Structures are given as structure tokens and as C-alpha cells.
Length: 385
Image (cartoon, rainbow, N blue to C red; front, side):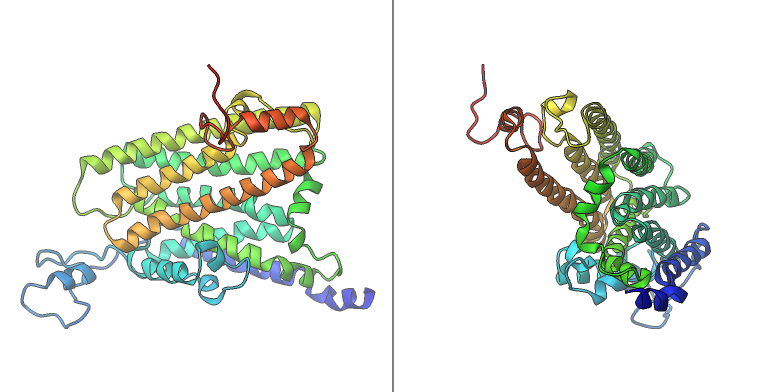
């Protein structure tokens, strides 16, 4: 409708630009490392008394053994999108329902990173995921990678000095950069963009030229992804920067093992991605990847090592969690990302079966190769001698 398009012209790209401006303000004002928290000598449930505070008072006020110490945490901003939603595609759906969202909100208030840190994290996540207004698939590729790399970079000045922390944050930064570079390569490859747009057709409004209306159709995906990526800063903070009352050899060993696992998973996932791109460039965007390199051992080795990466982050954070809320924040965001990866794997399997179901080579490879875990025998398939 030409008249509708002209009516929207004064507000062209108003909402995307407004969100980007808000995200930029949040990021700039909160990017500097937080100042040391003031020393307080108060209790949560009673005025200051000249006697030894109770254990409950010490837990809430930061008073330990009768001495005043800086508070370990300050209340973190809540994910407003998670509190409001409940519709398909909202962050509540991604986090596993209303109960999971409520648990996440409560944990953020008590065990999450400092409020100033979370403010910057939320701004960066929103700005990164707003790339989806330009191309819908960019939300879960560029937005995902930029958010993870930025979160890990944000934790560097806060992190404890240790090999485990350095390994995990380095792996996460490299993971985010790799995700962005891979998407740049894929977008430059002929034939990928139409395939990508087909997967996100539900968020594309082709019945109108009004930029505001077209942007609103993408808003649920952008906000839900931004909310999820905001929470992913929590396991990184807990694993690398959250204060721990006592040192533990077990925690240190788990942290080093998790960091090494994350780096290894990232390297192998990158190898699988490169092997896939080589096949696509040689045979065309529509060609299946059959039995090449790591693809001989798994039908989706890149997805498998992606899951291993998220499991490593969760393990590193869970080992340092000192409360039920911290444990929830350590496990829930990586688990949500893992659920998205598993859902994408099932969707890709269905599309591949439809596209290559008539190819005997594909069917043979499918029957002989596990879907995810390398070496796991397929049900009903007898291993050879």
C-alpha cells in the first residue's frame, strides 16, 4: 500500500534506531569497571547493634565474623522481557516457562553479577541482537557471537587471576569471534542467504513496505535472544569473578579442566565448520556433507562440540557456585543455549531428510553415522568387526 508506506516514512527505522540508541547509552555508561562497593555495617532485618551479627545478617549484609566488609553483590536489573512475556518466542519460552523465569529473576537479585555490570551486559546484548532488524538470521548469529565475546571481555577486569579463568574467558571470546566470522563467510557465499531467510520466514513481513511494521514482526525474536544472551554473562561471572569464601583444590581442578575442554571443543568445532564450508564451496550450497573429516563420526559434529562448549562453561560456573541461586545461574543459561542447539539439530535433520531422502549415499551415511555423539552406535545397527 503506497499510502501506508508514505505514512510510515517519517518514522522510518524509528524503533530499531531507538533500541540501538538505548543499548548504546546503557553500554557506554556501564562499560567502565565498577567502583569498589562502599563498606556497610548494616543488617538486612534489624538496625546496627553492638553485638555480633547473626549468620543470617552476615549473609545479607556482608558482615562476616563481626567485621564490616564490602557487599559481594548488589541487586541486578531484572529481565523485563522475561517478566512480561509468556507468548511463543518470548524469553520465558526460551528459559523453560514461567517458573524458570521467576527462578532466574530471583537468582539475579541475590546471586547475580553487580548491577553496574549487568547494565552494561544488557546494553551490549540488546545492541548486538538488534542486528536482526537488518536481517532476521543475524539475531542468532551476529548477535549471539558478539554478545558472548563482549560478555567475556567485560569480565576480564573483574576476573580472578588464574589459569582457569584465563582459559575460559579466552575460549569464550574466541568462540564469539568465530561465530561472527563464520557468519560473514556464509553470508558472502552464494545461495546461503535464501536458505537462511526461509528458516526465519515467520519473522519476515512481506505484506507491507512499512519499516515500522516489518520491525515489529522481528521484535519478539530480538528481545528474547537479547534476554537469553544477557543471562549468559552470569555463568561467566560466577566461574571467573564471583567471590568464593574458601579456596578449594577441587574447584581449581574443575576450572582448569573446564577451560581446557572449552578450548578443545572450540578448536574441533572450528575444524568441522571449515570442513563443511569446503564441501559447500566445492559442490554447491545444496550439497550434503557426507563422510568428510569429522563428519565421518557424527552427522553434526559442529553441533556436538557446541554442546560440549556450553557444558564446559556450566561446569566451571557450577564448581564455584556458593548458593542455590548461583547454581541456577551457572546452569540455566548454558542449558537454554544447549536446548536451542538440540532444537536446531532436529530441525536440520528434518530438512536434510526432505532434501536428500532420495540420495542412496546420504541414506547410507545417515544409517552408519550417529546424529551427535561420535562413536555412539545407532539403534538397530550392528557394529562391524
